[in-house]
Amino acid sequence: MSCQEQQEEELEVLHSIYEGDESFKEVNPTTFQYKFGDEGSYKAFNVEIVWGDNYPEENPTVNLDTFYNKHILAGVKEKIQSGLQDQIPDLLGCAMTFTLFEWIKESYEDLVVDQPDSQPIIQVEDKPESNSNNIMEISKKKEKKEQLTKNQKRRLFDKLNAQGDRPRGHDWVDIIRHLSQTGGVIKD
Image (cartoon, rainbow, N blue to C red):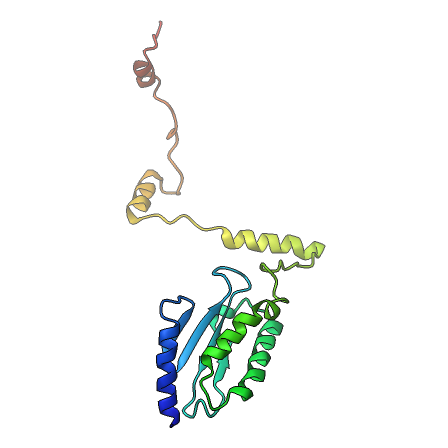
């Protein structure tokens, strides 16, 4: 049986096995991804297996550098990669995608033992003189100028005199009008 025929047969088997499994994803007919671990967990990772033209007679490419895996530590990725590479030589010549995914499922706890449960907190060294500078830089970046529309700018300009100041008495209260509105009585 040719490599192409073996790939077609394995593709049918994968479709029947993983039908309805949301963790399995077929990127294209020769690239498959499987998500291990609980959704949103810091220990969850994605393994991508890519078949070459001569697969299963040659090793498939195992990719752990997907965007979903950006939080996985390099040591954990190396452990997963080396474990898969140890499994592949025994499986050459036969369909191995399902077997590799199942090996990861069985070994999941051992593979992620070094991965923390949550994102590690990064501590920054405090330097007395640089700490105050950092605070000043952060506050400068967060400060934004108020954006005014053309109409708001025009009204603001109309309220100002030639020097850019408000005219004298702009905030004075008209006593007569004020008292007439409040019901106060003016005595002579």
